[in-house]
Amino acid sequence: QVHLVESGGGLVQPGGSLRLSCAASTSIFRWYSMAWYRRTPSNMRDLVATLSRDGTTDYVDAVKGRFTITRDLDKNTVYLQMNSLKPEDTAVYHCHVPMEGAWGQGTQVTVSS
View 1 (spheres, rainbow, N blue to C red):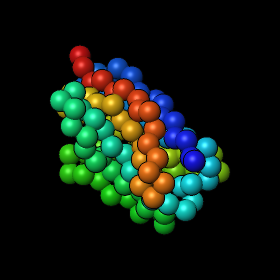
View 2: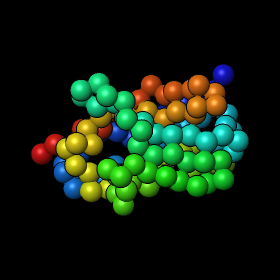
View 3: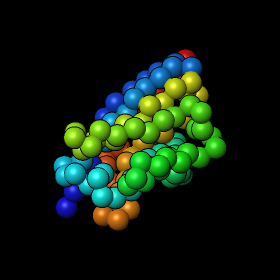
View 4: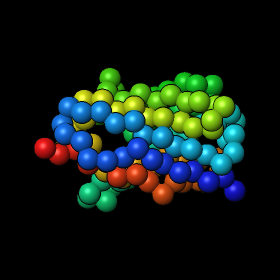
């Protein structure tokens, strides 16, 4: 079973940036699509962005133009670059591979002045 480990979260001021990482224990990102989700303080789990096997990306409207997914297949890692962060981006961010049913443990992002 693949293991996913997120990192890169933290406390940042509004307008700041963070880069999250999702490291996989196998080369799963070569074969399957993945997604970033976030669980908000109100305990809602929202889709943030997706990365298809062929490299196609898609983003929810709330983060379009601010967040970018990239990947390094040699490192089995997917990144989520988050710019122009807003307080409403505060959440625990998880990476997910639907075909494997795999979730990471999450990394906390807090946007606050």
